[in-house]
Amino acid sequence: MATSPPNGASSINPIEVSFPLPKAGQTDVHLQFTNNATNLLLFLTTTTTESSAAAPLGSFVYAMPNKASPSDPLSTPLYTHSATLDFTTRLAKVLAKKTGKPVYVGNSISFASAGMGGTVEEEVEGFRRCIEVIVGLLNREKEVTHQSALETS
Image (tube, rainbow, N blue to C red; front, side, top):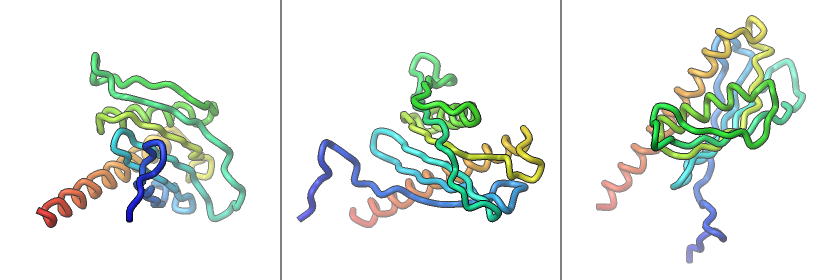
């Protein structure tokens, strides 16, 4: 007999993937992603082959689509760490705009060990790669859901 989670909690298991930062093969981004029915929850961090130290807690940002101005999602930081706040806010806003859902993003990615030490170009490339991976996961999830719906009908 199946039971539902208490207090309306989601029973959806998070998806966990890792991928290298562009131009920084020794640095991997680790992503944990949960697509709930009403929102997205995402956590990101990095690890390097040189360091086994745990990453410091980064920023946590909430963003949601803006009905009045769809091209400008609304966001608010829930926990701030100055080194990660801008990246986290931008990521949350882009995902809210692309998905039309509220998004929670926790981020402690560090570009310090990237090839050139974390330049703007490296951060932009890392940001683009994160978006590609997340959108790819969402698309794959839609395909699986659509396929299973076809099989049951």
